[in-house]
Image (cartoon, rainbow over all chains, first blue to last red; front, side):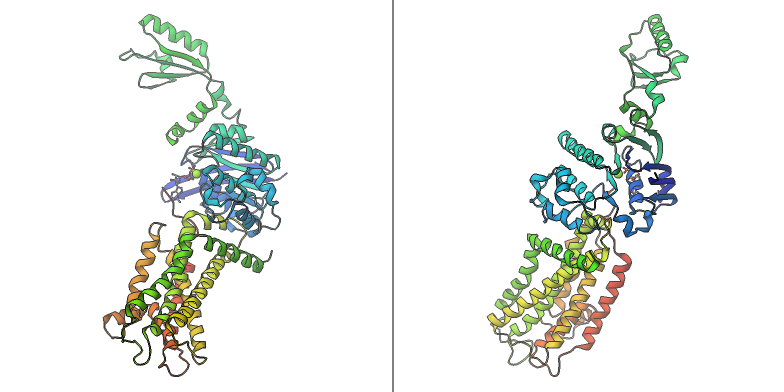
Length: 304
Length: 259
Ligand SMILES: Nc1ncnc2c1ncn2[C@@H]1O[C@H](COP(=O)(O)OP(=O)(O)O)[C@@H](O)[C@H]1O
Ligand SMILES: [Mg+2]
């Protein structure tokens, strides 16, 4: 089966800022793909190039066999777009807005089904301006579905949501998956990518730094063990063999260990000999979140 | 659906949106009527008439406020509404659908023109019923129709062009009003200025005065002939064409980057 999206060597700069620095992506039909990365990594730039809003500087892009930069009406009839932030006609009702957008497509999805999928049944006849933030976002998804697209783009569908609203959005997206849509999702939440996607690419500063099923991205890092502890002020320097893999910040030390038995033996031997208490000593496997933070250089933390 | 059916359908949605927005519907309609009442209260009892003998002040204000109606319904309404839709991201969302972009803009313009027509009729009836204004005869009626059509087209185009000079929603009322209000005062709309001072020379450059003059001529009892003001129509039309060119070159569909 041909790829729904095929991107090779994609580049885009804004003035002197290189926002996308050579990205390759291939998304198969029926796949739910998540582009995961912190704010400013280049996610929106990539999606909006795929949607035809922004021009690329270099690379080849194919979306359902079209070059999106040409803005073909035939392509727009087959994709659904949920932008990172967009308004909608405030004075129409939920049903009226969806109905208005349905009219633009040759083979729209039935109105009641759309309202069902996004769970806006009770709000059906309410004006858009009375909806909560989460409900408006689900209306965005409903509008994205109006034309019954083969391929749906979702740019950060749950950013800024409370846990309940996120859950409801996730349910809506899972409903779409059961309809067999190809979905291209961006997010800066690791758990969202894990919950929804069957494949994830982690992007940092315009480059893909890891790619694969959510459980196995960066498998090598996941297999490493982390030894954490806190050193008292004015403690002597760590032995050289440990120092090379240690990360220090205000007394907290984190050692990434491929061979934890050896590392712990050296560490505890050194601590006994120098009579140093290793406060908060902990031996742990990294979580997906840890791997993500490491891959993206800790920027995700700054993002939110 | 073919593009014609799409257009008709889009007009009905835009129309519904317009009437359900209390602020825009209310002010668009209230202002011209309010000015009609105020100006007639202030000047109605005076003997002065801009048309000279045997014509009341209302005979002037009825056509003058028809010009104002066209300007608020077309220029103000389109400039503010389109900037709002752009900054909200509504235009960007529309552009991601198969709807041809011109259908969307056409629908907005169509609603503005319908509102303008309705306002002109209301002002005309208001003047006739409450202030006994003499209607233009069959002789000048065609000139009135042409002036209204050229005026509506011109001020719609200027409204669209103006959106490209308004950076965001907060600036919209200031920019839109600041560009039009001074002209309304010096262009025989709010005040009949019949002199030849510097203000009239300034006003001569801009389209507002040419719209008001073209409409007023058809209501002036002393007008001889058909009342067509060829020069006024030509200057106004030139503004319309220039504005259209600016709009085509500069129009933005996407909100300014927030960063
Ligand atoms: N229109 C633009 N003009 C200038 N810089 C931009 C523009 N859009 C995005 N950027 C910059 O490009 C980088 C990537 O942005 P973006 O693609 O929005 O990232 P993300 O969606 O991952 O948060 C950021 O540094 C951002 O400030
Ligand atoms: Mg983004």
